[in-house]
Image (cartoon, rainbow over all chains, first blue to last red; front, side):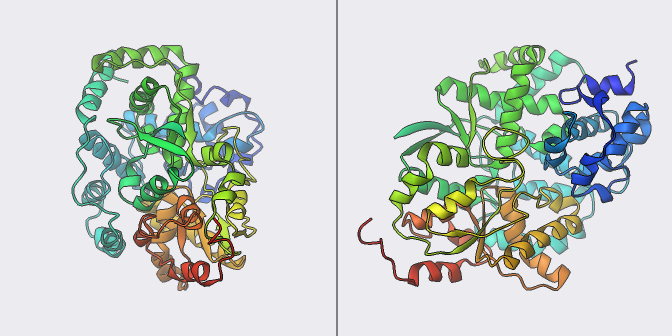
Amino acid sequence: MKSFVDEVVATPGGENIRACIQCGVCTGSCPVANEMEYPPREIIAMIRAGMRNEVLSSNSMWYCLSCYMCTVRCPRGIKPTEIAHTLECLANQQGFRVKGTRTPAMYRSFVSSIKGNGRVHELGMMFRYYMTTNPLAALKMLPVGLKLFLRHRMPLIPKRVKGKEDLSKLIQKFAEIRGSE
Amino acid sequence: MKNYSYFPGCSSEATAKGLGLSVQAIAKTLDMELIELENWTCCGSTPYGSLSEREAILVAARNLALAEKTGLDMVTPCSSCFVTLYGANLRLKQHPQLMGEVNEALAIINLEYHGEVRVRHLIEVVFNEVTPEVITSKVKRSLNGLKVAPYYGCQMVRPDYGFDDPEFPQSLDILVNSLGGEAVPYPLKNRCCGGSLIISEEGLALGLIRKLLENAVENGAQCIITPCPLCQTNLDAYQSRVNSKFKAHYNLPVLFTSQLIGIALGIDPISLGLNTNIVSPSKMLDYIYKVKQGVESGA
């Protein structure tokens, strides 16, 4: 089995991780570093130390907002944003349970909406998200949803997308080609 | 008139309806023919890429392959679609093995991608091809010094497209000024609004949104503009949530860049979808429309 760091290096965007000098510019640039169990600089050190379980079960990467500030500023050409996406994918595919964040559930609702409709249907996505996490929290969001609805920004029924069937076929075929990722 | 392959993005038809409407409304006046890509689906999106990176690239590749067949530049008004499509395009070109697998799958729906599409952000096209000078010449209703906070958000300028500076962007400032408005200094202009984490980590995102509103008000802005559907929804639809959480009283209209351009081009507010904005822009519209218009009759 590949070492953890090799696994990350092999993913697009993870190539330069060995060049990290632990300067901490990524952490200093991150708007949500203090929400994370381990901020970006630490995550990179942990990957290099082979701490697979600690990294993949942490909530850190799920807080990434994809603002790319760390990526722009890294003096070593590392792309922490891409690494966060890679870690999310690995954690998701390897079935790690993450405490203290509902973001994975939100992303899953989002992707299932895309697979079902071809495009995102926001109301359906939100419904699924609240049903799988905390249905009561949906009540709190009703006023915002209602405002969007009244201004024609929250269609009740998903639009019929012609490319939907092609998309399903494509995704299925791709899975066959790659085996299970 | 120049033709483009137009990729609206899912939100342009829903939460960001004002974006879709206003882009269509200004295009003709700016000599842009936006030909909607047939049978487009989700771009591939960041949440998708966070669960299955390669599958997200595959979804993007289908759209890219459709666009390639048109032979036109692919233009999207959505910053999120832009970062996804641009990134997927780059990855496919840099990783021949991935491109091969993707094409093997695309064959089943009779498509093939060769990596020849140029993915562009609408604002970049407006800035570089239409140009601020030409826009100024088409202005029918000068914004009359309206004070505007230009909010770039993240994904229009980062990670790196060689268009605007990723840390100190200027393009929106220049566009605002070309309309007769005044771009106010806005130090947080490229900071994150919280993105889609407004759904799963609302408290965190509301804190980021509050800073953005505060910084705009501090600098005397009468409105904020942004090209990004997610930024607009967060700043506009969640402004009341910021007010209740932080006991604040923000009442700052948040427009799409294309809506502001449309106002200055003399397009009516309904065609620009201004009735879909949640914080009412009526006060700033009064300011623009009521001040004596020097150029109106001649333009």
